[in-house]
Image (cartoon, rainbow, N blue to C red; front, side, top):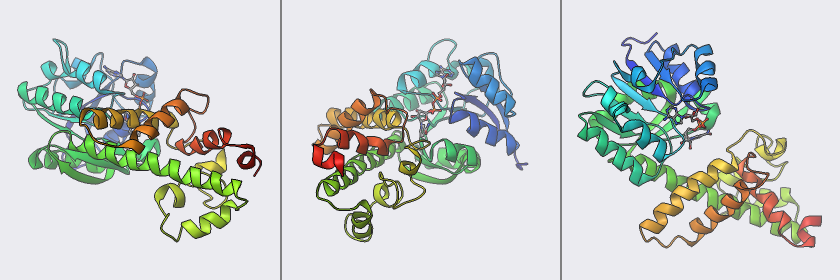
Amino acid sequence: MTETPRAVGFIGLGNMGGPMAANLVAAGHAVTGFDLSPEANDAARAAGVPIAGSAAEAVASAEYVITMLPAGRHVLGAYQGEDGLLAAAPAGTLFIDCSTIDVADARTAAAAAQAAGHRAIDAPVSGGVAGASAGTLTFMVGGSEEDIEAAEPLLTVMGRKTVHCGGPGAGQAAKLCNNMILGISMIAVSEAFVLGEALGLSNQALFDVSSTATGQCWALTTNCPVPGPVPASPANRDYQAGFAAALMAKDLGLAADAVTSNGVQATLGLAAADIYRQLADGELAGQDFSTVINRIRGNSGAGAADA
Ligand code: NAD
């Protein structure tokens, strides 16, 4: 039981929001949740989260409002309007948006919250559904020092680490930049394995060299896209239960928008966004993003396919 229970309105009780809200309840906070989906509400209720009849009702006496929604348009749509969260919450409420959204939308949302007399931070997460359930997420946070400090009692329940990245939108910026590195590096590792196969090199031999040489990276040493060298990687369970290719496509789409609107030369980032978009449009969309190696192998010549 927490020493100081906080009143929290939690909007968006899907794969991530549901377990995050349940962890806050388990820690003794006074959470009221709401989701547009009756199934999400039922699952959260079964996990101990009291459910309101509307989003406005869920935040009517909140000190904190947490949103965990699919995209920027959902966050802005939920915040704004006569029945929106900004109008319904008591003045001075701290809005914490944990969704992964466009940096520009995050800044718009924070400015709208402040204009309505509230406080706001963006706090996207990494760690996936497993981290949301275990309360071990990492929060990348944008906003003022004071507001982030005020959010800490909740963030420490839902996660293990908080990194203050800068002003409004900086958390989203960090999330997109990190995932651009990850998406590109997984393609690089996958292309190298497929080339190695074409050259008659065993996957284990390439792993043994690169994992201790200059090619080492998380995509190789933790989430290795071929079965064998890293027993816990999704490749060993037919690419199930990892970070879905569709979610990587979404994040790299946001990164690509930011690359384009800021005039940055990010040739590989744009190419990676395109590759994951095609993957997400196909039958491998639900598999871990390391399944990109299967697309590369499938599109390569007979030598690689036979290896
Ligand atoms: P999800 O689709 O499971 O959940 C989103 C929920 O929001 C749904 O239940 C939907 O009904 C609800 N919703 C949409 N609009 C609403 C509104 N106006 N009011 C109330 N509810 C509304 O998605 P998720 O996997 O929980 O992801 C949520 C966010 O977290 C996304 O931005 C995603 O990119 C990010 N994220 C997800 C993961 C992951 O592994 N799933 C990891 C890191 C970040």
